[in-house]
Structures are given as structure tokens and as C-alpha cells.
Image 1 (cartoon, rainbow, N blue to C red):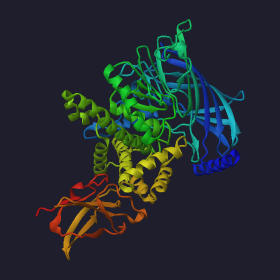
Image 2 (image 1 turned 180 degrees about the horizontal axis):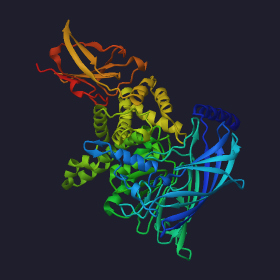
Image 3 (image 1 turned 45 degrees about the vertical axis):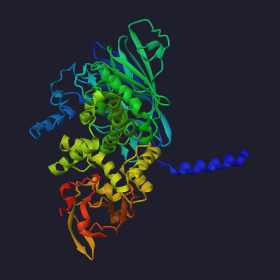
Image 4 (image 1 turned 30 degrees about the horizontal axis):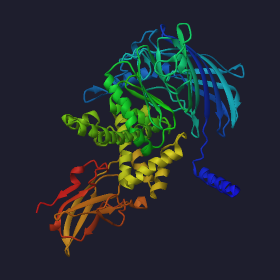
Length: 631
């Protein structure tokens, strides 16, 4: 009786496998051995890289990122920052305040660099050319499709004094913030190589496995991506009750392994304090901090534990065994299984953790699709903060009546992201500074346009999608997106196809308008009149981006109804989202500037008519969305 069952399972597995996106992925396996000279702020490294060319293409070149070469006077990062500083908005320069003109003033022993001392394949030195932050490797023999190559590389680096994500002597006191610290192979995908120079922001990396050994002075405590392999010889809170026996000498070697990630970060300081939390049926949470209020750092650790069940239910399972919040860097910056974070503010803590999904697991090309990384993480942050506010903070306050004032100031502690992001989008849309979200992250004319676009407009993309398809359908879309595309570098078209398949609607128009243009939405209630005891309501489209329209009608007797007008481009309609009586009217053709429908009540029975009473549609002029009947 077992064989038929096994046959059916095999058939089912084949169907499921066929239903998954079948896109080839390159693969890497890094083995790195690093020796740190902390006093000199330098280190040397040996890197063995096994590269799997799973593409159908023959590769004649390789490209590596050498990020720290950006931290030198006259670098592209330096010149771009100086240029942005000449632009002002509301009297303030548009440069990154963390960089400003500092790179131009670095002395030789303060710069950052990554030098390649040798790069060989099968013992043969390869021809290399350094293009500042990009290393071009001209291969003596091409790498054939569906083959593996082992690359041996020796490098030396100096940790920059300038802190931009990475660096030494951060303002928070952390000695070494080690991100973008190793020669990192550029991604090669169906669009070819992505040797993106390090100008300002956003990253893209190849999925793979990391085996990293870091030899450093014994007094340093480390936090990192991956799992520490020798906690019994390290200690510092990692030993989990085991007896710690450290080797003799002045140095320790920390050994980390990280499976199926696209980057590796670490940080080191002699004064790190280590908080550990274990989540039942979940990961270990590490918090390593040097400065700040211990109570706030403790709350950050406890908050991660509190929201974990909600996060996994809403966004998908977290597949790794640990996550580390590490104080360091210059703000908040996400990496697989870890983040460098300046302080314990819960808004930043949640946002960076949400990147574990929308950067760590989905791994879009952030340079090209920053809104899919930052915007999606921002949207998820809002959801998590609302959950934490209602399930943890409100419960705490109810148990401590003397703390009722906490809820009054809660929006300052955990701002409601959706409202803030809509406001940010409205600002940029009306400012004349907005640029399409198809703009490369480094090529926005202003930092304001990048930030408001990638974070806020990207967040509104999802909130407004919930308006179009329904919030429950959006929830299903996000889980299906995670299920099908984790570890596969999805792009915007991939997401829209998931949204279309789950919702049963055509949504390519939405991506085209919202992402590829700066056209705005503006619907209004134009007029109403009475005919034969029924009320005619005419709507007007004053904007340049069409949308489906929900109109809520409140009657004086306390009843309500919703008039739902689908958009013709959708070829579908969303399900009712609540128990309010709803009438689905014929579709509104996007070419028509007005639309008229009728309700079976007299004008005198109507109290309020409002377009999009949920305010999920990003209508840039909401004052004309609502009409109150005064008589």
C-alpha cells in the first residue's frame, strides 16, 4: 500500500516544483581567514571563493566590490557628497549629514582601502584592474555554464575613520563597525553583471555560504552574521552555560558560519554588553551594545521576542537560528541575520529587523528597486509597531493605571508609519522634486526625493494596494510573495505577477503609474442631484492616475452603504472588506473624466458622502473627497 502513496506524493511534489519560479541563481561559498591589527586599524585576509556559474552564459570576466576604496579624498562618494552639499532644500544642504565633506579631509592613516595582493585560479594569477570601488578580473580561461571555479584571493584593508555604515570610532563609541569589509563578488543575473560603484546607498549580493574566522585581540567582543562555532573558547555570553576555556596568548579566533546569505557583517568592541533572548520555536536574539540606557536595550530584546509570532504569521517564517542587533555604524543598516544600529529606539529596531525579510531573504537588487526593500520594510514596520502598541504597550498601561500617559505619547515613541508615510509622499509629490521610483538609488537628484520615494512612496505602494485588492488579499499576496520568491532576487514584475495571481485582477497598470511615473491621484465629489426620489452622485477625476473608487454614504438614520466603482484596467473587483452594505457599479473607464451613479435614497436622507473613508488611496487633495449635507 505504500507505493501508490509514494507515487502520488512524487506527482504532487513535481506539480509544486513546477509551480515555483524557475530562475537560475549564481552561488558562492566564501571561506575567509582574517587577522586584525587593532592598534593599526588594519587587517589582512585570505579568501577562498567557490563560484558556481549556474547561468547559461560563458563568463569571460568577474567583478568584485571593493567598497572601502570610497573612503578616500576625490573618490566618487566624496565628489557626489560635495556636489549634493551645494544643493539646498528649505535652507539645508542635500548631502548626507554623516558624510558631508569629511572624506575630502581624511589623512592617509584615516582613509579606507581594500587592496588585492593576489588573485589566482588554479594557481594562475589573473589580470585585474581596479576601478576605485570595483575590481575587474579578466579571466585567462572563461568560466563555462553550469560549472564551478575556485578563486584564491589575498587582500589587505584599512578601516576608515569616516563612519558610513562601516568604519572605526563611531559616534556611539563602537570601535569597529565592519560592514562591506571584504572583497565581495558582484551579482550576475539574467540582466548580466551588476558592478555598481559605491556612491551612496543600497546593495546587491550573491546567495551563498560563509565560513569566516576573525583573529583579533582577546579583549574584543564580536557580534556578527552567522553562528559562532567555538563559543566554549570565546565566552562573552555566547557559551550558553558551557565552561569557557580560552587559548593562551593575546588573541582569540572567532569562527562563524552563515548558510544561505548574501552578505556578512561583524562589529567589535572591548566594552560590548551582551543580552540574549531565546524564542520558543524561534531564533536566539542577541543584543550587543556599548552605550545607552540598559533598560531600553533590554526592551528592544524583549520586543523582538514579543512580536516574533506576529511577524512570522504576517510575513513568513524566519529560517535562521539567530538574529543580532549590534550597536555600531551611523544609524541603522540591515544585513543577513544582523543589523548595525546606532541606538535602541524601537522604531529603528523593528525597521531593521523587517529587512531580514525584505533584504535578507528576498534580496532584491536594492540599487534598482530600493522601494521594494526600504518601502516594503517600512510597511512591515508599521504593521509590527501597531501590533506591539496594542498587544504590549496597551496591556502594560492597563496593568499600571499610573502609566496612562504613556498611550498619549505613544505616537512619539512608535509613530504610526502609514500616516507618516502618506504625509511624506504628499509632500514630495507636491514639491516638484519627486522622481520615478525606477530611478537608480544613486542617481536621484536629491536625497529628499530618494528618501521620500524609496521609503514612503514604496510603503504607500503596499498600503494602497490593500485599498485596490482588499487588505485580506494583500495579506495573502505578501505571504505568497515570500513563499515563491525568497532566496531568488525578485523584481517588480515578479511581485506584480504574484499580486495578480492571488487577487485575480490585472495590476500592471498600477505598477506602471505608481512606480514608473510621478502622476498623482485626485478624485472629487463633483455634484449631486435628485431624480425620481433617487440621488445621483457625480464623481470627477482631476488627477492623472486612475484608480478604483470606494464611496461611503452615511445616512441620517445611522445606516451606511458603500458604492464601489472598479477601474476598467483591473478586469476584476475586490471582495467586500466589511459588513457594510455594498453595491458594485459598472467599471469606470480611465479615459472618462466623470462618473455618475445613483442610490435609492433622497438627498435629504444623506448625511455625509466620502470618497475612500479609509484614506488608503493616496489622493493628493483629500479636501474635495468629503461632502457633508448641512440640511
